[in-house]
Image (cartoon, rainbow, N blue to C red; front, side, top):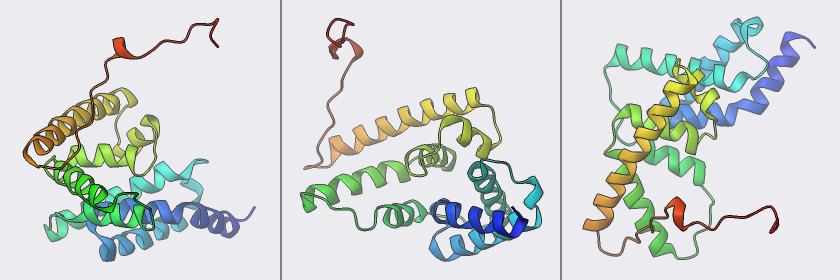
Length: 189
């Protein structure tokens, strides 16, 4: 397979996810520029692209975004909402009012977290990466990523609880402990 053929396959398979990731970091318009630049880097360094290219591409997109932030000094406040819109466009919600309320509460809770917590959570939840791949994107070990993810989930949970307690009409998710979950024995299987 030639480099051009490999690049074409890489682009077709990974472009939507790289675009969603970049959009979640900096918004749609700049996200498209970051995505284009990411694939330009991939083309130039085609021989460095690993067999599983998505984490590598997301790492490139992350580095390009960091460079952009350093150069421009801009912050992103609405990128999470834009990424959610892009990723879930066309999704059906049974009860529109409840869906809007739940989404608003979740986005408000997510927006209250640090940039680092939002990134860790969205890599797993929205971009579908596993801990190993997400750790590679962030440039840390899998164990470090797992700890960061655990802590970010706890902070998000507290934030949702605080918002859910203050906002009428926001459904609260019941807590389930490990003791209350039924266990399946080998005989029942």
